Length: 372
Image (cartoon, rainbow, N blue to C red; front, side, top):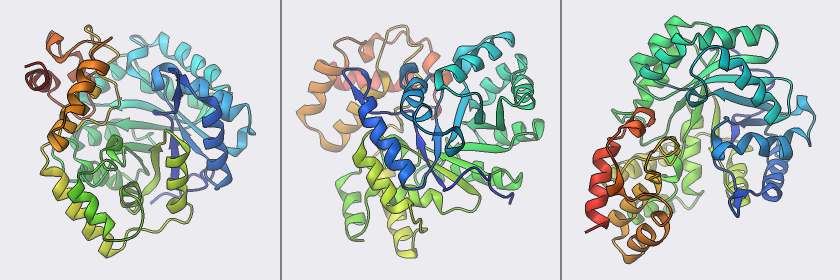
């Protein structure tokens, strides 16, 4: 395994796809506290993208991190997202906007974002990898990588075509480890085969591995130890070759919890691994929609359907079966947005979904449940 990048202090990173909001805007006061606590604990890795928090994540990092800390004290990762360019000449312009938005002269890591077989073809057509590598040669960023959402065979194809890739970011958690749609284990094994350090995203599966069914909570409670998040994040961090586990923290409570067990990281014990396996089995028996609420699907929806929120209502209905989910569906999530039945079956959401969900079919099921 290659020596890890010298600028990284620890194996836990601040994922900035979900930040605390106040009246629809990023709460800079809260983010300042979170950044300070993170840095004070000895961590220094921050991950963002132009599309995160509806385009507000980069600006938040500029105000709360890069204006307040010396450039050499933190590691900043950004990404080239597919929705912001359609031809090669647009890539450099986007990259310069990203530097400006973050308030820096260079990025430490720059990733080709959310690569899949379909998206990879677009990047090749636009010479995106070649353009990014030129930017690296010019000193605009230090390390080149990809974030990935597809089958392991597609990942292997990309790594063969572009051996310049230094690091791979994959979705990796105990539920997706053997999942046939995500192929967490197989993607991890491809990274190991090609000697690529792994960055883990979605270790708690968008919060799904925190908001567990009661039966699963009881399993972890018997351990009389950490939080549900701690078992999920430590599971991912314990694998050889994992250089970084990202956590999308939305408040100081999450930050403090994560710091408590990652500051002096210890892999899961045999007893804890047994508990994780039991929870995984319980979780998979629920028959829930495996949505991580990344919200990639919502930006291009012509009917403005808040798909992740409607799926969350459906999952909650299956687990709790109470009136509360119907209230949220009818009086919160569909008041200013489309209903599930408004879907025109265009399929844009399915093309971009990292989980490869059959969203159109699932929306029909949601409509049947909540729009009787």
